Image (cartoon, rainbow, N blue to C red; front, top):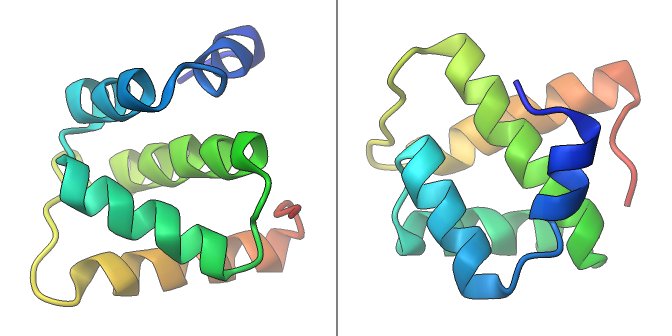
Length: 95
């Protein structure tokens, strides 16, 4: 689990470093990362810092659900929707 200080540092990394962090720590490639980033943007998360926090939270959520998550066809969208619903239900998501 990430502490608040580490997350605050991570979200301000240059783009490529943040993507590489996600690749190394969560096993997602650049293409999957871009899909996830765009999906959250489309959910009105236009602030990059907030969106990156939620992206890290999403990957942590997946790690809790499954030790090694893999996305099949349509799997990314389904997991994003499940996560978004869980966050909306707990009213933690902020744009």
